[in-house]
Structure formats: structure tokens, C-alpha cells
Length: 108
Image (cartoon, one colour):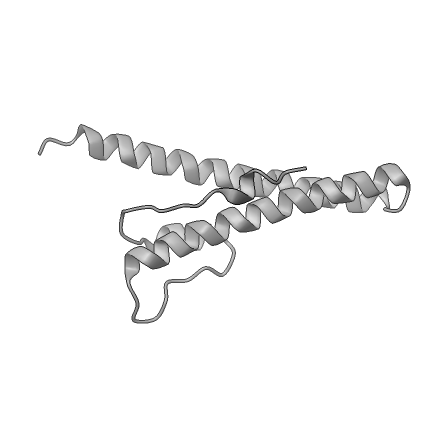
């Protein structure tokens, strides 16, 4: 089971960005009148939680299919949804790493 991933906590120290928020696809929007940095952290946290939940759901549906309780179409839907969520998380991670490397190359 995927239980170790749920313990991760994201604590970014950079400001928010509406483009990143729109990429998360989970309805994670900046809080009205709140701290933009904390809303970015919330958005990343919600995206990570949603991804973990999607992966856990796909795993549970796959186990139920092995028992004969779930239709093959439901398994395919769950696995495809998990694949899409994982690809989105990897794309966001790649962008964050790329931005970090770009900032680290800047002269102070």
C-alpha cells in the first residue's frame, strides 16, 4: 500500500503563482486576502494529497479486481486516472526543480 507518501509535508518558501494554481486541477485557489506564500503551499499540499489519494484508489480498485469484485473497465479508469495524476505531479516537480536551479545560478 502507498502509506509512506501521505506523511510528506510540503513547505515551499517561494511566492504564489496563478499559472501553477491552474495546473493543479484540484480547485486549489489562493485564499482571499490571505498570505500568497501560504496559499501556494496549500495548493502544493492539496495537489500532493489528491495525487496520493488517486494512487491509493487505483491500488484498492486493482486489489478488488483480483478478488473479482470490480469490473475491468473500473480498473482501467482508476489506473489511467492514477497515471495522469502521477504525470502531473512529476511535471510540477520538474518545473519546481528547474526554477530552483535557475534561481541558484543567479548572481547575488
